[in-house]
Structures are given as structure tokens and as C-alpha cells.
Length: 101
Length: 334
Image (cartoon, rainbow over all chains, first blue to last red; front, side):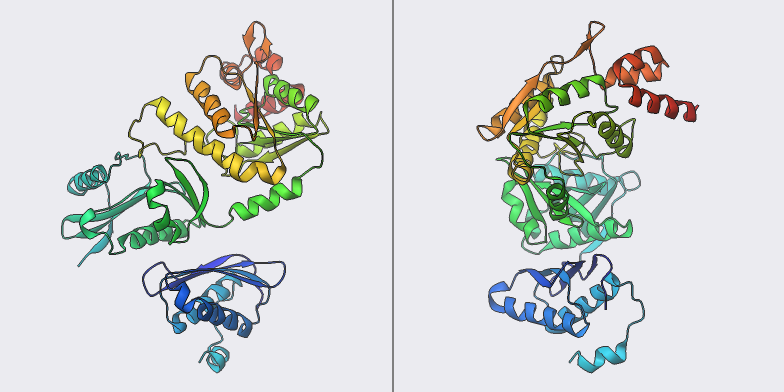
């Protein structure tokens, strides 16, 4: 999937995560701010990175503002932000379901 | 159960009164000059509020009785949703240093700070993008000077100021204010300054985007003393801090030129504040105004002449290429 412009998904509410994806020149960078950074920071970064890899996104700057989201939420917000950033409105659920769990 | 609602001051006097009380209790001065206001209510009790003025988040307060319940996040989210509806992806908040960390936890990033005020931004395009623009425009050589102007429109006086800087510096960056609060649009002003500045090969003209703190965007409501002098001091201090802390280092700027403003006490305070904040890091050079026909040249004088269709005066105060554009524009409008 190719990202065309910046896009955001998620909110700042408790148990949510807000993910903003911006096109980058090379590689993936993840800037994370989390209320549970010390305990789960690495895990959150890993979930975001793995989701982006599955979506085939390799050149992106990620800004994540986490308020204690579970992994399923992190995946969902990352996918939604990616589809928005790619102007893709037809979710390929079959393909997503194949790897989301 | 607390609910989040929009507050309409005119339609709901009871909520408006509660809003005033909540802000006053929080030590803020209620200022109704806002575009959009939300509140979190428990029945008729207002627990938290926040407002928007353009893309600036203002007048944010949470009742002391419900703090630690994270109502701030709901307020900010509601305001960001509203901006999102209007396709605005970039916002600012001015706040006291004591509440900085709450906004940082909501994804706002600090731009500049003084003892009394902190400016933060959120979203995109942001300062990283502006940094890229500046880096792409960077020229080599020393010393490096900067001038900030609204240039509404650019006069022979502006050109004189640029010339003084161009003569004694290797590179001069001229920043033209991007805020749309003037007779000429930001695009027109920038284009005209570029035309005029083309006379000097070492002058680079750049937009300020949102990274110069203007008195019109600066909310003074959290200052105890709202006198003009106090507002000018706080705003100038923050503007100078942003320039010194963030912009000057990117371009290696060591001097800033300003035009003398003998008649405006507020500008005098502004210049004093710039000098105080810059300290030894950036030299502030005050250039006396250019005088034509016995009076200092100012954009105000040009605008007055335009309004009066006094084209003879306009022609004396601006360069020919600017005059042509102004005249043409005026003909189109009539």
C-alpha cells in the first residue's frame, strides 16, 4: 500500500491510541508517546511496525499517542490510518483477517 | 453522567454564566472572541470547557472538583474533531508553564517558552516541515541577518531596511508574515517583497508561516495584567524566544534588523523585549525610518493613500513594480 498524504486515526481517550502516518523518504520511524511507555513501549512499537509491514508500507513516519490501548486497538487504528493515508476506501477484510490475529 | 455539548453563548445564558465562572475560578479572563466552545456538563453544572479561535485552542479550564478525571482529553478531542471537520490538521495552544505537561501528554509539542507562557503545536504540517523549508533556502556566508515584516504593501521604507542589512551582511533572510489579516493577501505581500528584494543578490525572502507570534493571535487572557504593555511584553518575549530558540539556529542568524518606530509605545516595548531575549546571541539593530516628503515612510501611509486614490503619493512611496501591481489591482476592483 502506498501512502499519499498524512492521515490520522484514533482519539486521545483513555484505552485508545491516536496514530498519525506521514509519508517519509526512507524507512519507518515511530515516535511514541504513551502513558505506559515504560511497561509496554516496545510492545506497542512492535505491533505498529508489524501491522505496517503486513500492509506493505515501508516508508512512513508514525506518530503515536497512546492512552493504554490494547493490541487489537493499536492494530485497528494503524490499519485505519494507513487506508486513509492511501485514499483507499475498500478494505480488503479477507486479506486483513489472514494476518491480523 | 457527564455529557459533552457545544456552548452557544447567545442561546444559553445559563451556560454562558457558568462558563464565565469556571474560567474566572481558573484564573483566566473570559474572552468571548472565539469561534467554537464546548463544555462537559453534569446536569446544569459545567465541569470543563475549551474553545477554538481559528486553529488556536483557547480558554481551556477544568473545575477543581473533577480534576484527575482526564476531562481535558475529552475537551481537546472535541476541539480537534471540530478542526478535523474543517480539514484543519494543525493547531496551537498557548498555556502556562505549569500546565505544559498535560498538553504534551495529548501530543502537543513545545515550540518555545518564556517564564510566563509556553507555545505548543500539534498535527501537520508542523515545525519539522518549516525546518525543511528553511534548510532548503539556506545560503552560505557570514554574518547572517534577518528581518521580519508584514509588508502590507512593501514600501520604499521596507526596501531601505533590506538595503541596510544587505550592505553589511553576507546573507539576509526576509520573513514576510503569513497571517491573513491585512489589505493585501499573504501571497501578494510575499510576491511583491520578492520582486523588490531581487535587487540584492544576497537576500532570501521566506514566509513566516505560523512561526512568528503575532499580537493578533496571541491570547492575553491568562495574563493577570491585561494592559497593552503587559501583553506586548509577553507576546514579544515569546516571539523573540521562538525566533532565538528555533529559527535562528537553523539559518545561523546572528543579527536582526528592525525599523525604528518612534511613535508607537507598544512597538518600543516590543523592541526592548526582543533585545532582552536575544541578549548576546542575536544582535538587534534598530534602523531609523526612511523619510520622504518630510514624513516617515510607512505601509499605513501607503494604504491611506490607496484608499483616497492618491496615486501620486503611492507612486512616491513604493517602487515602480509595486506601484504597477497596486494600480492594476485597484483598477480590477473598481
